[in-house]
Length: 106
Length: 144
Image (tube, rainbow over all chains, first blue to last red; front, side):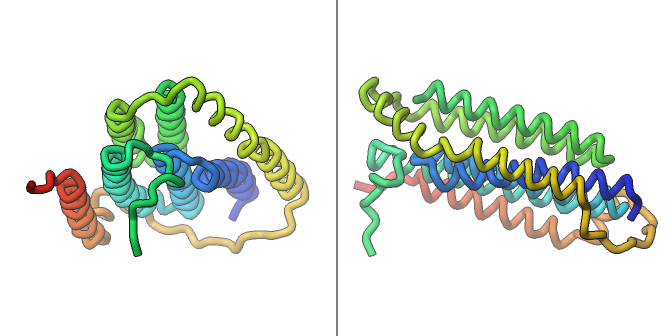
């Protein structure tokens, strides 16, 4: 691995880690279901950037792109279902605060 | 509350757009187009639709929430700055060296996706069907 790719990896790794920490923080500390989903999305963005970066460094951009396309499709499905769950929670409980969703039994 | 949520969604769309530019610069144009159109466009539309169904909270509750949020989130800038400083130090004094990689003959993304990773496509179809089924179940009206 050349010096250039090492520097590139180091440079991008800062942003990847910061993006992941931001998403994780948003997921852990937000009391709004939509914001939790946005935090999850930000964390997925960090993973996407990491995959593309590794593909670029290793010279396997095509494989990285195909994996990222699969990841994006999965991300869309998860987002749609999470949005549906948030709407369902609002309809039944009139709130999207997870602390107040106490109707589940078991 | 709704305005703040819309602001968060716009921020997410901007992050997606910036990420797609970075992807394009890293020689991944197809993934960049997917990211821009799907993540920046479609997901924003889904979020805005979801938010449009919810109600604004009262002003008193908004003040309480703001105070709570400030208490919960004041750590975030500190964590970001500390992580940035640690990583900058790592970059200034690199101690770990990644192994050398052999150059690999690059294939076209279409041939990789349709020939090598065709099981992924099957998985994508199954995921889409599962997602559609999940949404149908969530919004099914109960019989009275």
